[in-house]
Length: 257
Ligand code: ZN
Ligand code: FE
Image (cartoon, rainbow, N blue to C red; front, side):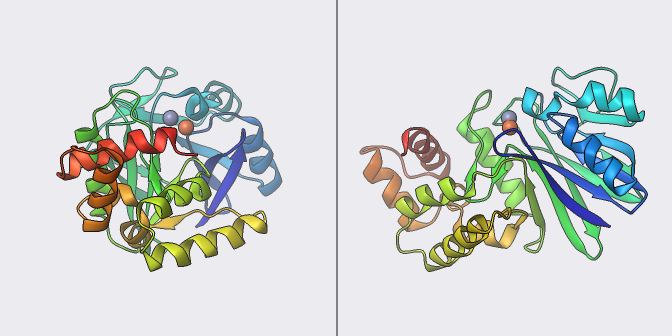
């Protein structure tokens, strides 16, 4: 099975899985890059998975469905390009001979879902949309800090070697913020250098991995003393519980330059 990030817009990736014959794509915000890739590799589009309702994740769905006849699967509780099969936490999706488990991850949007495959060529993989980014997390447009905290905890509990397929190349700006939060984190320094080298060569920093994110992503590290200390220094008088720390980090990141 092959995993390809198809670039879209400024900084989106449309993830494609294919077996040389059939393909699956996740969150096609536009159709053109997917159609070119299908043609170039001689693939038939079998399935479209959607994580949430934002246009940069769904805009290409009607055209791709019409041109390829692919079936569409998306979140049960969001406005979606119809028709589609609607799924939510605990549901299983079978595609390309693989089995995906749906995980509810509200926070960025109210009905956001992720798709976890426990074994893909011997290694797990998760399509997490705009919930978990490398070094960061999505903005809280429709959910609460508590929901995002629980959603990130669900993702952080996946096996450490799970490949993390996020939908945006936000890694370097996230890591600049992460370093401001945790200047003493040596794993973070090393990962930053590695990601800077990748971007300098024009390569994606993704997929990341769950064990990397646990070590470097401040939004998964809201119980770490250095992260708590930084959040409370930024917002004097704020509480030190993980949800309050996440709320502070998210607001701080919104204005961080
Ligand atoms: Zn989004
Ligand atoms: Fe997005």
